[in-house]
Structures are given as C-alpha cells and as structure tokens.
Length: 329
Ligand code: SIN
Image (cartoon, protein in one colour):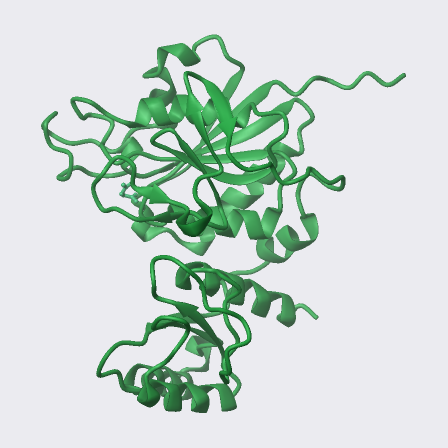
C-alpha cells in the first residue's frame, strides 16, 4: 500500500497591508505606512503559533490599494505550488483590507482550490497599542487546518467569509468585513471553527485548476475592464472618453465595462445610450448593483447582462477573466 504523508504544514504568504503596517506612535491607528513588517516577524509576534508546522514566504510588501496583476499572478502561482505539495494542509495569506475581496475572488476564480486558502488582515497596524492582526492571524491558521474546508475564505474579527460574498463594509471598525445577505459562513472561537452553513462539498479533482492558472501565468496584463457608476445626473462622457482613447491608442483599448447600476440594475438613460454605443462597437457591458446588499435580479429586461450576484469590483474580474479565456480560444 502506498503510504500518503499526512498534510500538516500550513504556509503563510505575506503580501503587505495594515497587518504589516508600522506607525511612529502606538496610539496612531491611521497615520501608518502599510506593508512594512516581514511576514516572518508577524508570525513571531503570535506566541501560540510557536511549535506549529508553519512556513513563511514574502510574496510582496504593498498597500493593497496598489495591488497589481503582476502580484496576483505571482501569488496565484505560489499558492498553487504550495497547495500541490502533499504535506501542505492549507495556505494563509496576509493582505491589506482595501482590496482583499478582489484578491480573494481572483484566487478563487483562477485556482478553484480543493484545500483551504485563508486570507487575513488587520485594521490596526502591527505597532498599535492593541493590534488586531495577531488574533486574526491565529484564527486564520486555525481555519487553514480545517479538514473539510475547500476554497478561498477571509478571516477577520472572528468571522469566516466566502470569497464570493465578502466585502469590506467599514472604513475603520475592526469587524470591517461582511458577507451581505449570505452572512458569514462561520466563526472562530478559541481556536475552534464553528460553521454556520454547510461547507461546499469537496469534490474530487485537481487541487488547483492548472488550466486556468496557466492562462493567467502566461498573460502580461488582464484584459482592460472599467467600472463606471450610474448616478443622478450621469452622462456618457466617461464611456465616450474610453472609446476615444481606444481609437488613439489601441493598446489601451477597453474590452469591457461593468456598470455599477442603481437599485435592481437600472442605468441612467444618458449613460445607457453611451454604453449601448460601446456595446455595438464590441465592448462587453455587464450590470452589477451599486447597492451594498442584494443583487440584480436575473430576467429584468435590459440590453446588458447582469453580474450573477457579483459586486462591481468582482464582476470586473469575472469579465476580465472571461475575456482572457475568450482570447485563448
Ligand atoms: C491596505 O489595504 O493595504 C491598507 C489598509 C488595510 O490593510 O486596512
């Protein structure tokens, strides 16, 4: 009988963010520089992690508002590399809160992992008098050890959120994340994980979707997709500007537009006119709602498809990856 090694290692990948932020004063929770403290030092600051089988790797050191496709590509490759190691149980990623939901959705969409990938963060810098990062990191490591969990989740302030649902919903509070109507999928209590919803079934198949990852690995950029908000007194100027730019410089051609639409996917008539022109010229247009909760109900008559419940920023990624797949046909 072939002896399979029990997966026991959890790999912690650092990308920066406030969790790795440094301020000059302990009481300063806002005037800090994000992405300063090495991931190995973040781990060393959490004594209960000592003695666990952990490995640390620094992938990037950025404020997540400055996240790039190049970092995402590298991150996806390293996550895949570690997940494919038989001895690795799961991966934890430390990340800034500001674009965390986008990275979570990117990794989920590209990798469709069959082991846990747990993203975590902090709202206070590592130098704060009472930092939240150490507890979040401890909780994230616990979640990454969950035997039945597959896919990308976010752990913050004791809650576990699915990549598909999670969004940053507060600019300052420690419990800055929510999962909208779906609610969090679970919580972490004293190192134990309590699931509120049934976990998605861990179907067989590859640990990561290499087919999709290879496409991302060989791309220099994501197809350009813009997000435009429909608001009172909108006009078509931004769309017209994008189309003009494409005429002047084809390398900056916009391939898709996600409209963050009002309510149940409605679009200001002046913006809609410009979007119809863009669509007629080959630009893919998708409607997501700008409402913090709810979705665009499918079936409502519109010239533009809806985002299947994804928020505008996640719909942007879904459309970009779809265009990338189309290009490879
Ligand atoms: C960032 O997103 O990198 C800075 C803000 C944060 O992590 O809370």
